[in-house]
Structures are given as structure tokens and as C-alpha cells.
Image 1 (cartoon, rainbow, N blue to C red):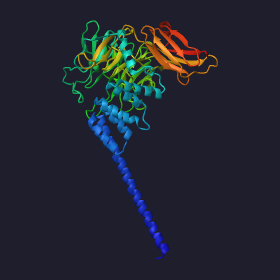
Image 2 (cartoon, helix red, strand yellow; image 1 turned 90 degrees about the horizontal axis):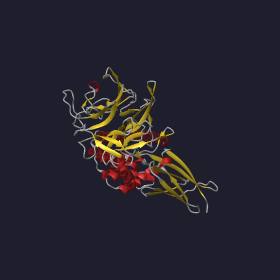
Image 3 (tube, rainbow, N blue to C red; image 1 turned 120 degrees about the vertical axis):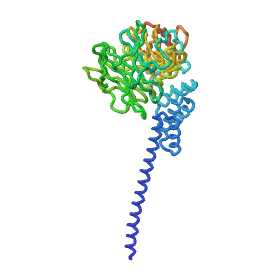
Image 4 (cartoon, rainbow, N blue to C red; image 1 turned 45 degrees about the horizontal axis):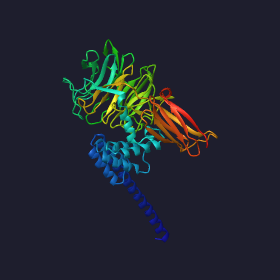
Length: 518
């Protein structure tokens, strides 16, 4: 054999071996990727079935292998949070912030865990980072968390809170008004052969009940709307003839069950047993907590549908000529990486809802947000005693909006979630100050100006600095009188006063402050 033919032989053999090696490598990589994917799916299945301790171990194994590190950090943190291990949750959320491309919403989640662990200062720092990185104004922009906390507690005289006699050692929540009746949801046991218990909780499924305002009698709301599984909460159209009911979309004891909104019509004093599903849900996710506005034009609801900001978000649809528009997410000013649930809109268009992520007193807190130019402003915490360190949620108001009802699992109740009546003695309302500072001489915008704003009644002062664009934002209570002073090097001081009469005219007050050069 000639040298040339030998070279050809070796060349062909080398190509063949290389192809075989590539095939083996490709098979090995695909097999490894498949194994990784299955391991992650198994960990997620444990998490989704509430087996948080087992899920933590599974995610940690993946991290040791260098797989899906950031994702596993977040799931471990959430698992510890679900287990009420706030210290460990904070540790793992902190690891998330050390990742190069972490989502800034982690600051909110970390802040909440630190808050639960009693570390208010560290929590405050993380809340600040979130709002600063996202250029979002907030009450915490000019207050430490403890100052913010004390402000929420200071407003306790604005409300009177009273537990209702409907409460039991089981859960009562989701109040809704229907004429003179209060309709609510409860899982109190009922005498029924057909009724079964929830495999996850071991308790009865939820049913709807009504409280007659005159007789104070509590009874099952509607036999026609009862199913074997969870029914409620519910809301009603302005003419009280259409009901929007949250209930299980399906039920399987082996899986997490989604919720959906169904519509029932009133005819001959009975609600239709045959209900229609509101065409909102298009996948394996939950749609719940419907509220239809008093003009019957908009339906607000909560959902964890894809494309949101994390957890349950608030959405709105327009109802026109019997048709629903596509759901619109209320956006990152309202929705967070946590859960926003139970929307309610008053006659002025103010949104009330519960959130476990906006900074508050702990657990779910109730917030409100006014509208400007079709968009909702920054939400404000209603404050104590409506909000507590427990879960406070599902607020509705009577037509006069001087009183309402909400649910809470606070200490001192009958047990579980209880329903409370609230009287709004002096409703909390804020005016958002959107101000800019400039030189009177040449209109140059002035950064780093010092603004001192003082509550005349209490003498409490907050200090803010104008940003690089000469702007600052703050939030002033509409029923208070404030003095403010603006100082900057090389310029004369500016002093002004804002009265309750002026503040009550605006939800957002734009100020343009000119300083004279010395």
C-alpha cells in the first residue's frame, strides 16, 4: 500500500471516529439536559404540592450540581417563606440579590421577610432600593420604615372596627352587599350527606351564607348555587339580578385546583343553577374575586395568569353590550412580586385591595389608590386598626361609603378568618405633591435642594432632597396643614404653606417653585 493510500485510509477512519464521538457527545448532552429538566420538574412538583421541605432539598441538590442556580435560590426562599421560616427566607433572598441579573422585585420580597423577622431597618433599606431602582415614588422615599410604621399606627382614630356576630371558629370572609343582606363565604360544617371535606385542609368546603340586616338571621344564601366543592366569594350587579361567583373550575385531590368566575341570573327570586363561565381564563391558572363597578361598566378581578408581575395580580375588563374586553393588568404601581387580591372600587373610582407585598404592618394589608388620567396612583396603606400584623383583606363599602366590612384573622377573633364592620370616622386621603425647583433667573432646574415639610398639628417634619432633574415627590394628608421650606446653597430660602382646603382639591398637585439667587 502506498503512502498516499494509507493517508486516505487513516483520514477516512479519523472522520468516522470523529462522527461517532460527536454522536456520543450529543447523546450525552441531550441525556444530561433531559435529566436536569426532570430533576427540576420533580422539584417544582414538590413545591407546587406544598411539600416545601422536600422541595428545598431537591433545589439544593440542583444548586450543588451548578444547575438553575438563581431559579433555585428564589424557590428555596419562597419555600422557607411558606414554612414561616423568615430568617432562612431572608438568607436565600439575599443570595438572589448577589446574582448578576436578579429581578429588583426580590428587594420587596426580601424586605417583607426581614420585616416578619423584626428587622425593620434592614427591611426599610431593601424597600428603598426597590422604589429607587424602579424610579417609583413612595411614602418610604422620605421616611424610614419605623417612621412609616408609626404613621400608620397614628391614624387609629380614623376608624372604628367591630367584629360581627356571624363569626365562628371556622373561616368567614369575602363580604358582599345585596340589598339589606350581607352575603359572605364560610367553611363552617353543614349537615349534608353530599358535602365532602377538602383533602388539603381537612375542613369543609366553602359555601355562601347571608346575614339579614333586620332580623340578624344567618342562613345558607342559595341552594341553587351550592356545589360539592368551594363556592364564593360573590358580587352582584347594580340591579342585583346578576351574580359573579368564584368557585372551583375543576377538582382533583392530586393537583392544585384552579378557581374561575361564573355568572348566575336571578329569575323568580331564585338564582340559576346553570351558570356560565366568564370568558377570562384560557389556561391552567386561577381567576377569582370579581367585583363589578356600580355603573356595571368594569369588572375587576385577581389572577395569576401568565404575563403578570408575580403571584396574583389585579386586572380589569370593560363590559360593553354584553361583551368583555381583553383583561388589562393594572401595572407595576399596583401589582408586585407578591399577591394583590380582592379588588373593590368606590363611587369615586378609588381602588381598594389587599396586598402581602406593598410595605405594611404585616401579612395582607388593605390599600387604596386614586385614579389620575385613567391610571391608578401609588397605593396607600389604610393604616391601623383596619390593618394589623395579621391578614386583613376583602374590604367592601356600603353605598354611602361611611362604613363597610372586611375580613381578618387577627388575634381576639372567634377563630380563623372573621368578618368585621368598619366605620370611617375620618377617612384617610392623600394628595400627591409633584414638584420641581428652578432658578428664577434662568429657569435652571436645581438638584440637591433641601425641602423641609412640617405637619403644623404634630410638629413632625420630613426632609426631602430634589433629584438631578430638580424634582421631588411627597404625600400629604388632605385634612392636615403643612408648612414647607426650600433651601439651597447660593439661593434665598423659600417658605410656603399648604392648607387642607387647597390639598382637598387635588389628588395630584403640581408645584413649580422658583428660588432667587443671593
